[in-house]
Image (cartoon, rainbow, N blue to C red; front, side, top):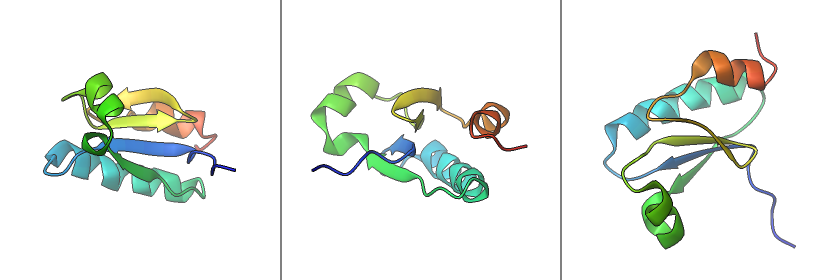
Length: 83
């Protein structure tokens, strides 16, 4: 049986400065929520690369696109039940 997808995922790629900033921001918020975000390299998956192209970083919450290019901190905290 396959592992369930992480609640928080960050679609990223190597050498992406915005991705590095988003990863740091997401890690802080995830820690507050008791979660560990999973980083997914879009270049390792042809389907993800075709879908997202250069539109990274992308934050997925429960498998759905939540924000891209930057982490929408207030919205993500709200959607995770954080204040």
